[in-house]
Image (cartoon, rainbow, N blue to C red; front, side, top):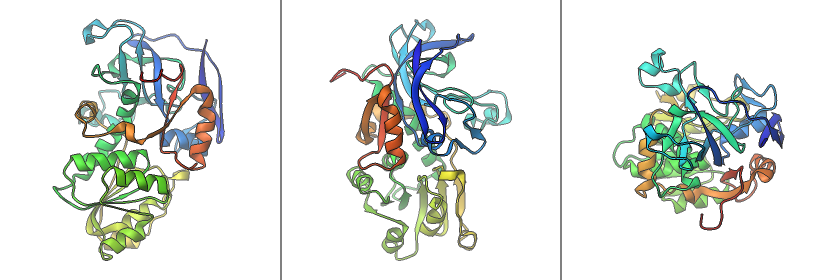
Amino acid sequence: MSRALFIRAAHDAYVAPFNLREGNPGEVLIDVASVGLCGSDLHYFKDGGIGSAIVKEPFVPGHEFGGYLCEDLDDLGLSRGSLVAVDPNKACGHCEFCERGHPNLCPNVKFIGAPPFDGAMTERIWVPKSQIVPLPHEFGPLEAVMLEPLGVAIHAVDLAKPRLLEQVALIGCGPIGLLILQVLKAAGAGEILAVDPLEHRRTMAARLGASRVGESVDDIREWTRREGAPLVIEATNSPLGFRDAVLAAKIGGRIVLVGIPDGDVYTLPAAEARRRGLKIKFARRMGEVYPRAIELVAGGKVDVASIVTHQVGLDEAPDTFRNHADNAPGYIKSLIYPNGLPKQGG
């Protein structure tokens, strides 16, 4: 019998035995190597759900993950024991959104790690073979798990369409924000104005190349002489994130909202947004971006390891959730290793 981390309700996470179900046709069994603790996982822990995705019974989170194949996949050129990543978004493939190339918007999606579908914070998991992502030989479990959040960052920048050397305001320097920062630089953005209330996140943003770092949107307004930036990307968990993005935006500017606010509710000064004639987009997961994510990491354009601050085993995972919920000092991105931490240098 496997073990898993369960979320039973808000602020109730625990490790217990897990009955691994039988595999379905077209599925592959993998031994989970590593799982990322994502902001959406944290919302399930803090709020007991996100919108209509409610935790109604004990549920295993985890959609950012990689693992080792338990069988050969000859048609993919992969053998038993190969390390792979997994795209958690199993779209239907035949709705109008899938046919238009937007599987992230599929209303029939089966998303690994979103209720009612259990995720990967367990020792073994069955996944659709179609969702297996082969990896370069030099990638390890850390790189495998970080491709999914990097994909979210790539999708956000795709929506933002930064112009060459364009000034960008980045609100929120958590894991997704710091990945967006690196993707913006790779995309040729100009001055990047990054703000976050937590000092250790500001320090990391500066280290990764932000032009200026500050605590709040007030800093962005000061740096831009109260005009605002032409492009704003918001990646916070704050109900005030939308408001801050509006206040940071220049008249006629563009905003991309990536974050999920606590309580799933934004506070918005509607008049400010309307009078500025802002163009606003919401980011929903990601499209077909894994090839580019792999290329950015393999080519050294994005340093995914730089933002990983904590790596723990399954038994430490409940406390890790609590520490993230409490904004414990030094926490940015945590990885969980259900089958044990890798050996030093492994």
